[in-house]
Image (cartoon, rainbow, N blue to C red):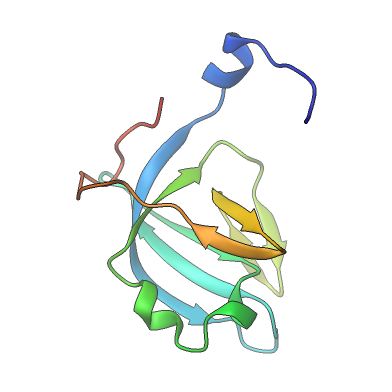
Length: 110
């Protein structure tokens, strides 16, 4: 377990539901996927180290998942990542989280 945080710490996180518009392998990288997410009022690119777990990344298109949006952008292999996908880690493998029903892209996670 990590150290305790306050509710104010949690409220500083901007977590929203994004809908995958497209996903593809990053050229020249074995582990990276480039996602384009619909967030309702904007679209964002997020780079994630999940390629080794998805032989056909296009199966993720249309899926909704929680994203951390107010994290500093990072560049991977020349691609800027504008957020982070929130997923469970099960034995070193990402398990993607999804809302129980379809909701509007950009919905706030509280």
